Image 1 (tube, rainbow, N blue to C red):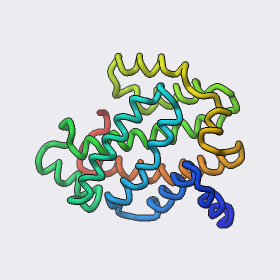
Image 2: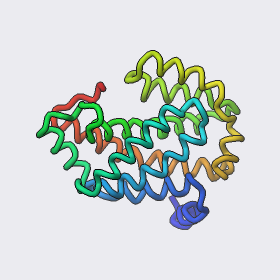
Image 3: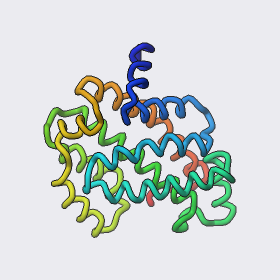
Image 4: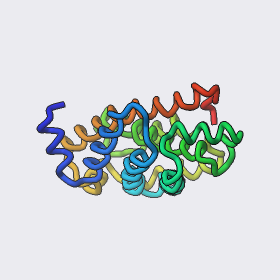
Length: 206
């Protein structure tokens, strides 16, 4: 990416600019610290809100989990320390635990990444296929039938491609640049989080 182009994107003040810049900065660190991680993640909630009722479940869950992790950042310094704490207390999968919250936030980041990839692979005015495919791959395997049914029904209320661009204050050209920046920057972060669990012999099927 050209440096001048990246600077221009980050300076426009749009939600996608803030997200791309935050995750690029985050991905440059070898050991993820909790406070800057939460700061970057807080920008993503705007995207869930832009997608309407279909992703309301994700927005509510994501925002609450990021808030819990943000509060925990006053005590825990890194993502590693969260896993260490819950492993010692055998609470990794316990409802409300920080390790479980981190797992859900990671799914939220991956959902947006998959949605962006699908969005850029087609020029369909409808976002239903892009959103449905992303949800089916990232979140559906871990959701109850009731949640999956509600999400499926909500897909009919998704904004059109042009409506989403207007909500995000982007053009076709600018949205592609910024979505690709997020895709590239978020993937190593998602992989890093997965390795935190795998290195401790914790499966990812939950």
